[in-house]
Length: 62
Image 1 (cartoon, rainbow, N blue to C red):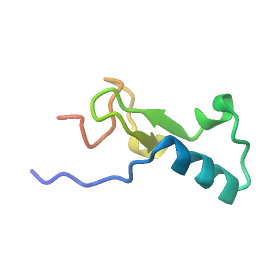
Image 2 (image 1 turned 90 degrees about the horizontal axis):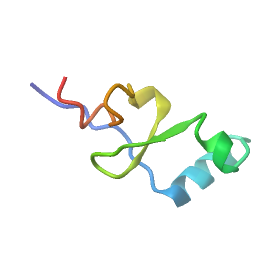
Image 3 (image 1 turned 120 degrees about the horizontal axis):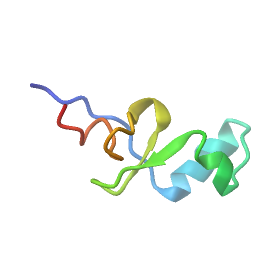
């Protein structure tokens, strides 16, 4: 069973990503693109976050 490593972001990196992609940096808009992983404590892009267990796909054992 191999795990794919997904990109993980800090809050500062999220702000930079949003600015580079022409998006608003307010907290509500951040949630449209990134989610907090309760397991590893990092932010991940919504595409890498299933949300079933409030953890990112890297930390999800399924």
